[in-house]
Length: 234
Image (cartoon, rainbow, N blue to C red; front, side):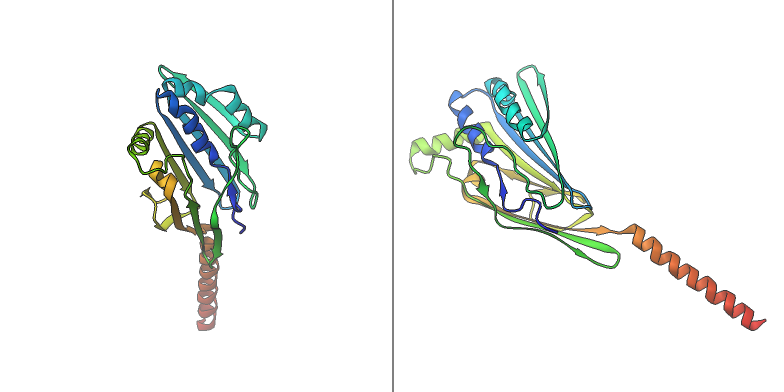
């Protein structure tokens, strides 16, 4: 199976949005990516951006909504006292490149190095493997001085991001920060965005239909053997 991410995913919105809102000093912003890979190889990608204070108002701005809709995403927004959120969802067919819109004239793609997503077929189950290295990204606070450290500390308090990956079957191995039997989640902060991260998950999907067919064939064979044996004894 070809990697659904191919080699590129426009995650620049993460930094562009935060850096645009950071000088305002009002509120927080949270970005949560959720990727569900179906047994067919099709992928459902969801992006949820939530903000509080002035950041919440910018999160649901018409420009951001239009960027998603222009690329065929379904977008819903919600508002509550002091906060707002945007949820964008899009389905991708097997092998189709997944891209999340960047914002602004200077938007560019961040490439995944050695992205790997493939499956291995066994007799009664499939194994799915996903590996990707997200390279570090400069955020404009690389100088080692008090101002840079203060800036990073402030950004830590206003920004957080997570990426949840849901592959078919049960997880066998992963380096995710948190996982259950079916999904794995990695958390990102300012430091991990700067340094980059390696993500890996391996799942096993049991084909119960194949098991049922094999069991049925075995059962039929046993019944035939007993019938033939009984007739021979008679």
